[in-house]
Length: 244
Image 1 (cartoon, rainbow, N blue to C red):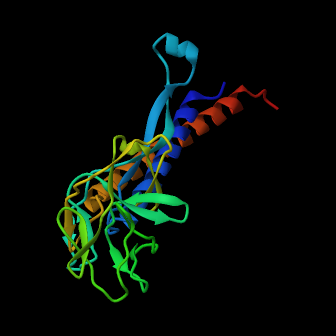
Image 2: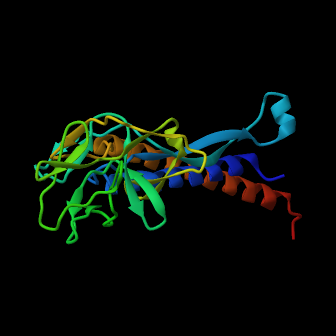
């Protein structure tokens, strides 16, 4: 059996390192519209079953996955007619090269062919009746209930979908998510759309900086525990050796 203190300390360092990497990614994307804050899920498990049965087990931190906070960010005014935000639950649907993807990033634009596409990636934005297309050079406007108009003619309705379990959404890149095969999705027939606004990231940069300071201290404590324990074991081995 390995040394329990070294095992716990080493696992603690690994978990803290994983958290710092995710935290730094949050900070880098704090100004990316629609970005969702993430965190590493760490749980403990009994080191030895025998000790666990005696209720005296040592607990080792175990990285189980990543959690994404799907709480909405604040709405920021841009004044751009093609920028929209969802005032409530739901996700926009875009057509990515690998299939449909979902986002709260409503930074859209019209390409040279008149298609409504995402600013990040140039992915076509989907309406309830398919791609959203206007004649090249025409303008586009969105009503509060998601209707899309061009030259006072209704051409489509922005597609907004809801998920019963948002943990089924996995990040593709930045603020873009893929849905698991078993995700339960429903169409929002009457979305509340806010035109001329985008949803900001839900990352609180001050909280992230405070967390970084805390993790730095925790990392130093774990590293010190491992270093001291390693030194103690080395001395114990040296004391147990026969004199030359």
